[in-house]
Length: 271
Length: 282
Image: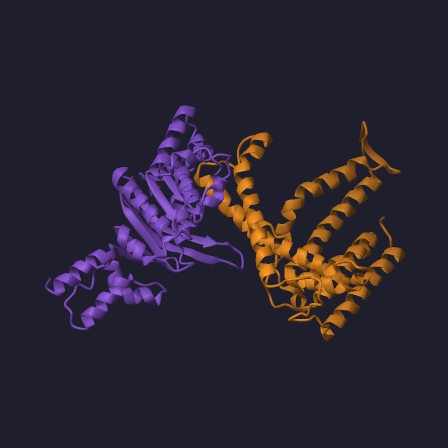
């Protein structure tokens, strides 16, 4: 049940996408999002779709595994689609009832927004699925490195992020365990209305909080015992450096964005 | 009350690349008032097996019968099953959440839908049975020592009055005194309250000292199933799967090899002592 969440999870494989430098993937994700929100018209979206599908194919992650992550946002998607569909004014109105109306602009908006959201989730989860949390924070730390010149504690932020990410699977496992333990004592997490359900969560949340604090405490102690500090210049065991494939990836992603923007300007049809 | 497992198999992460066969074709019968020890290497399927016995995990294939009823029938009452088969997880003190010890122990019977008086009576009884000093009944469970917390957690399951009590490593992380207390408690419950106790453990000494039947798990299979004397005869096979026999078994084999006529099948220190004295003719 709770283990089905795929957002923020790593899927081990030895594909070319997995091997790319995390900075490239971070940059690519950013570019991809820009392309996604600048893209207009059928040709633009076709280019994005081709790019996305090719990347998924290259990453060797089963398509079904990626789409599992979409389950969690079905509600959000539905709301976005419905709001866009019924509440957008336009030049041609096909149907209206009170403040609700279906217009040509509403229909295209609903379709475009839904596609954008789905592509956004798939694209970003593709990054987390192909990059381990450690690589990700390493990449972030290196990319944001220049900010430390203006006294932004980049290293501390990266460390906090990697700890937070590291704790997710631990807490998921812990939740699963406590849930089972309370179910063995007859607790019921499924039935009842929303207030009852929330109340039933107490036997789960209290032990979870206690254990989260205990773990944080232990980790802090262990780090201190190893003389951890953020003040000195720290060296890396495996420093990041670019390979040939990373440079190729950079040129591909930049040309991708350029193509999407150009096609969207030249052929903005139908929007 | 008997539990019968018929060709039970369980797959973790079905249809993903992480698929693992945690249980493979398990056939097992647990009778009334037994004291069973389940041993096995980490990842051998012990914990998975125990979670099947009260329906927390549903077998991928196979059937489990409790009191002759198939627990996977659509109309089977899982809540009733959890009252019959109590499961104490590893480090059970991590599940405590109420403001007082007493309230926490009440949680189980309350979920069974009993009236307030019965719930409180059962909580008292359970706390009394685990031998917690009564001036601690109304203190916060987070103020107790590790051993006391564990006893409170066990009481929380006991208060549901299960016929079968399954404990996953109940003594992990306790000092020797705390460990003996827990084992004596289990023995008392098995003898006086006529419960069936199923114990998952890593310690061969503990298992040899207390249980009447040992089930050895390896890679999702049941490798050996019998009383301690029979099982520890196969100590060479046990070593191959990362386990061992109690230390006295090794001592007795060594003595035998040095021409002292002792019984090599003894499993406890007490028995070993008798056998050695006899062999020495005292």
